[in-house]
Image (cartoon, rainbow, N blue to C red; front, side, top):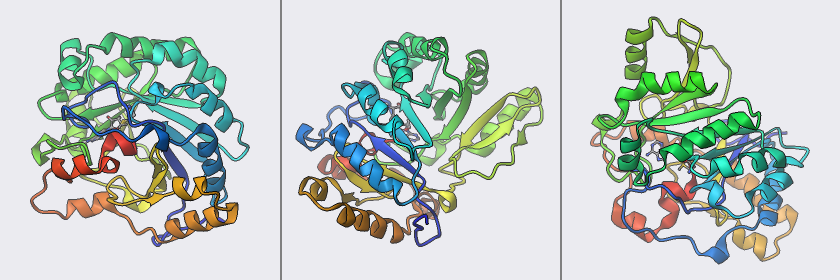
Length: 340
Ligand code: SAM
């Protein structure tokens, strides 16, 4: 029987951050000059990740997404993928990457058994990429996307965070790029989560606005009716091209959220907005029995009442969620630590 939280939501999907390090400094995620990193000795080993995965599977979980930080910075990642892909309970194993190192790794990831891949890409213009991510790496990302096609993967997704005045004039260009590389583009509303220390309401390009702009360009956009716990609502252009919008800021979907997050050092978080988590690494390393660990995980999920994004909507004077001074004292509050 699946374990349900206080709102009747199952635990279906675990996002595992495999590192808090990142090779980009995106303006909405890691805008500061200095960061405090998680101690290396605290990072979960692949074996520990596998053990925890098996425990979560007993609660009904059958999907895992590897994230970070930048997951391709974790050494020997294909080993972890090979191990997880071999678990009989796992129905879907995916990875979210910024794509910078993907061209070198795509073939190994595919061979290791990764099912699906999502590349984050906010702009198709080299100068903008440099400005928004503080590194000159657009050609590498595009090469990574090409490599995904070359090794024969299907189901590629491209995730784009739109921020007003930065890249919101590229909505059509990005969709057309996605069409050309056989990827479904998903536009993500800018969220006021951890690392977004410069967040302001008027920088958000809402789902409504995205749909209005696409309708003006292509003609009527239709919603695709789906009974899914996926974060993206999907739509179809008159010419048949499909795309998604993740409207976490203006139309959150907490009621169907079946996702938990595990930080690279083993802290279980129940919501992207959660300010506290449950340390699973300590009891695991202290030798807690399988039953003790399982009881802990089940008790935490059963007590879950989080509706972080919905609660944020009710906040009147909305700005950055957590002040920089507080973020600097607790790396676990950062977006790059908890994964997107
Ligand atoms: N490094 C990987 C990547 O770039 O995809 C994985 C980690 S990254 C934190 C995961 C996703 O979170 C990315 O698509 C990123 O754009 C998104 N993200 C980070 N900060 C965000 C914010 N403030 N609002 C919306 N999405 C955000």
